[in-house]
Image (tube, rainbow, N blue to C red; front, side, top):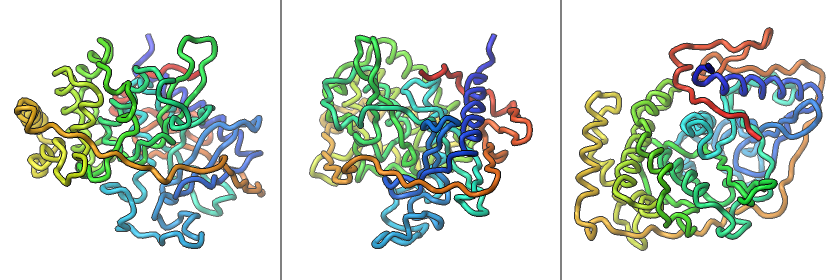
Length: 391
């Protein structure tokens, strides 16, 4: 019988081994899109394999190569342009957290892990960051009509976004993948989860792309209702705490997930629940989740009483007369949609032996460079979900 999480460890090791082999002939390729440093990695055959995002090259981080471009804001740990509640250098960890909390590849978050990478392209620096399996796709979700998507796919991505309080879910980071020989023509793949799990529930700029899709107003099917009901908030909190996610950010996940569970149990749709997180249209009035969060700020999320108190608070809020909490979210105009085709700049390979390994500091698979074995931490391995091989 396969141990829980063993497939995830094995697939992570395989991805790293293929990337290491590819780095001998193919240097990491910095892509032009995005505000931070993002690199494409290829396998030994030159095919796109993974995306690498170094922690120190995130937006407003010191080593961000795009800080050198004319007109680019200079790095600052307190820059107001960074997503509220997420510090520079934390986004890569959130990419991994999204994968781990997407239990068993439920919503389709690609295989992701925290790694260390050294290569002549980076000089003498050893880069800590996230690696994510590259997914071949047709386009972003905003390039096709919403009618092309299955309600279940939309619901699963929405459920994940609510649990993570995703403050950057737009049509460009939901990939559309064509399925061969299937009644369902396309499937949706969520990516770019660096701006999730902020340290405060601030809905001032919160918006989810799927709120405009008709599927969000359809009821959850029985399987998804059962999935939501069985979400273990305490277990998910321990995963994040083990990874080193700040307590304030763990509290955000707990707040949003409890609201999701309680609202779904009352028969609310994904759209209804999304409206409880977002601000009211044309009004500065806080969202219901923001109101609930204000009552929880002084409570320690590690306390044995926190979750029980939170559940009671959410019950009371949802049981108020509907007129006292009914509101519609503001619509957002995402002017930052990428234009043109993806442009990639290649870096020439120079002499050197690229090293690719998992960092022993992370609560994730650890691959030794010398013998390529996984060094398991038993207290952490039990937190990892099982995962099926990706097509």
